[in-house]
Image 1 (cartoon, rainbow, N blue to C red):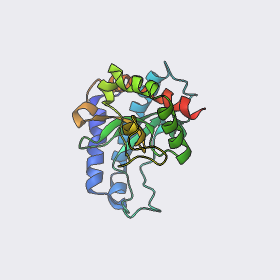
Image 2: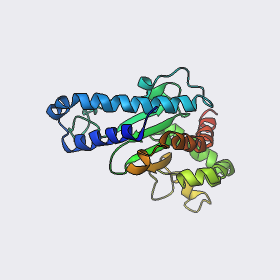
Image 3: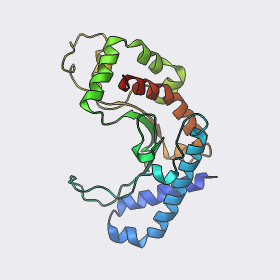
Image 4: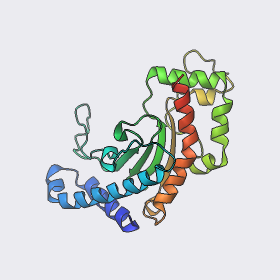
Length: 223
């Protein structure tokens, strides 16, 4: 079973990587990276085990879920070779999972998080969600108002338009929801919360509160 020491080990490595983000340092500290990665895989294994009680995960393994630490530099001005976080997408299909998936992210300086939803929706997906909200906002608003959801996430996160989306009047009664360009929920974690002994059960509690929101998005996009 993972322990707070495992998370502290991960965060310590990532903190130093952020200050020494080059291949020479990384290779000199590869043993520390491998230890941090194994600790992260252990956390992901525990989360998958907990999710399996209520989710169909299709036999996905922790290694299927964890993102590689190397950055894709092809289209980036920032040529730092490594990510300074460890992340995993938990769901059937792992990193290629669909909407019914949960994102687990560890990063120093209070940047850790639990998240889910539509991060980069295709234009057709965004249009479908907006149409569903305009047609009947009550199902989504009930989810957002649920006590467990409000406690864990507060509300929707992600980027929004400054004005009304095309095809909707700025006076629309649901304009605040319709402006969203992303439909995300995020539960931030301080370093202390991430390294707490109850990280896994608390994360599973957040994922449980997230589930109706993900199911709503899934149902809208399945129409």
